[in-house]
Length: 348
Ligand SMILES: [Zn+2]
Ligand SMILES: [Zn+2]
Image (cartoon, rainbow, N blue to C red; front, side, top):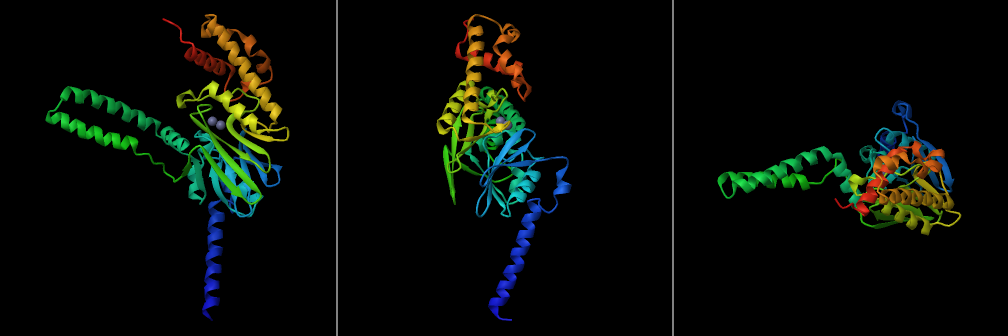
């Protein structure tokens, strides 16, 4: 047997083994056992673009010439099924999953993807948020310990005890800032472009809207816009106030999205069915109407309980089912009321 033949044989065996390993890790060989009652559906948007749905949450799959890209990847439970579904759409492997923001219904599967050879990509701020979210308890505990230490340091002064406490404080601070997740992720800041065969994807970050940082993806050639949770089609939005989300920023972000759209744009919201530009425009009107209504009541001196009792602000939208999603009418109105308080603080 000559060398070249031997080499190509070895390569053949290796690549078959590699493909088998990836198929196994990407879940296509045993979808039933991993199914576990989880169903991720796929529907075609156009050409090489599909949207995947799981429990009213959406992700987008772009089937490239050489590999598939996912925009968001669901939670840990649905991730194996999402890879199986993507595997049915294309023979190519999924190579990248890009997170729109840190919430677990979009990023909980990151660990699984990473273990399956898929590269996780997100904004650096999203990465920090994921870290902060998964470590929220540890973080809070450390913060408490740190402030107690700082207090006792003041009391102990420059004594031996003070030095001891100082060293412990430094160790804790290091731990506190040691930001690492259990999986690797590539990060970007603000903007990021993927220039592919037949498609260019623009990823753009917006701050302080749904969370402190959200990313949308615009497929320029296909004219398809994936908004992540910058759009809850047909439902009141969740504004993550713990992570610096804001209703003002949310409305501003929708303006930015609308500026990208024309009448042919297909919009894939983070939750809910596909939408058009005019759907997003009426969603924005709903946000502005309810925000102004609550603000007005607040400025008239009404308490939160009184505003909640005034159902006329949301009646029209409640009738269309807006309060039947993740965020109930009461939670939505309460968030708007807190935003009004923040904007116009009452003198005590
Ligand atoms: Zn979210
Ligand atoms: Zn979500």
